[in-house]
View 1 (cartoon, rainbow, N blue to C red):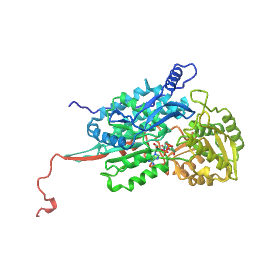
View 2 (cartoon, rainbow, N blue to C red):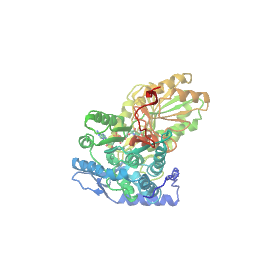
View 3 (spheres, protein in one colour):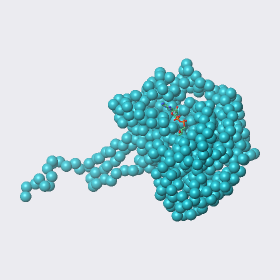
View 4 (cartoon, rainbow, N blue to C red):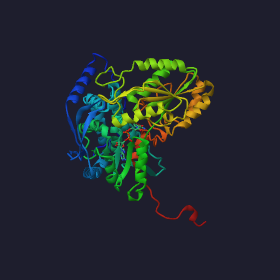
Length: 543
Ligand code: NAD
């Protein structure tokens, strides 16, 4: 067989398109939005390459216009889940033996298809089904996903290059094998890129996958499968099963061949899955690898030396883009007393310019929250905070559920820095603010570190270098992704590997070699060119 030691193409981050008025790219995206909006799609489980109809269906709607149907999803049940596991196991042998360059080529081709001909489709699908603005869809469904696909190939190659030393007469090698069995990917609603990365990263390393998307993100999942199909991914390598959570727990989790769980979502659900797996440990043929990136209560900490406009812009973008439904969204802020009056005015001035509505209207900065459950949960959190003594509503607070689930960008100022809204994830457009006395800067750093169980992202704004150095040190455990003079959202693959500690997850840093190494089981081979031919050692010899 012809072979070579191949270099993988140098990865580069996909440039973000502007979609400026009168641009061709804006016209193309708007056309695709209208086409998808007017077509009813049938989304089916895809198992072993076959699209499977089932007896249970669910309507797919737009969060910003819940009366509008985008299509109908067929839900997988026990039988389909059993098939999906069988399909993944059936495809495993051949996929594991497929030379790396051929596996990699599938995902590199997917990256180019997405950067080019399928870009508008994935963006439009994410805008309609997830209620993302053109910019939010572009940085997620197009750019971040292209980046995952390109950079993961590069990182896999780097992992393969990590080879051991060899003593004279010996050649030591390590090879990266897939885990064996199958990997279960359980994905969140809020990022199309994460939804695609969780099944594709283990697949690149030679594993086959059962993929359960979030119920509200089944529509973009259909187009991700279409992308992978067009890129030539063999049947059965990734099996899409939109299924109710309970049945997943009955059929897939207890399967003896479960080799890993690649999860992103809430801390509560990850804890539940970990406990379910731990409780059945004796059933498995190998220890399942558990990777979970979970919730956050991300902070913006402003020092009195900070530039006001920079801090306010980071708060507006960090807290309210995509309606605060990013795991990295700013949801608590520590602001110095000396700057508060000006910060407050500047924030109110920015928020007065924020428009809320349908993502097909590009002048809207914010859109709807994902579904009625989220809408009710966020409204309840705002109402509870407002009823708590010592809480002031600084901005927003309003909401309406027609034609979609709209919640105004809301700012709450709390007297109690340990109030519930400073500790718990709300996952909506709600920013809680604690105004601290300037002289208590150091004590407030401590407070910021100790208030919430999460440690995902955090930002520190200052011009005073001593203050920056102190914050980097005191907040070392408070965030897996720490930003100095930048907003806490918008990590870029290949530039800021992403993930947090404490209750925010296993911090395996998606979009880095650290994540990929969780999906391989290493075999070490020692080959001896001149093996000894007698058992005795020098010290055994007679003098
Ligand atoms: P979620 O936890 O409600 O759902 C995540 C996935 O788990 C979905 O596919 C859901 O259907 C599934 N699920 C729910 N219950 C289950 C069960 N009992 N058994 C099996 N599967 C089950 O989260 P979500 O609402 O989709 O996403 C929002 C959450 O995700 C937030 O907490 C956010 O912080 C987190 N998130 C974290 C990151 C990160 O990188 N740390 C990124 C994105 C989102």
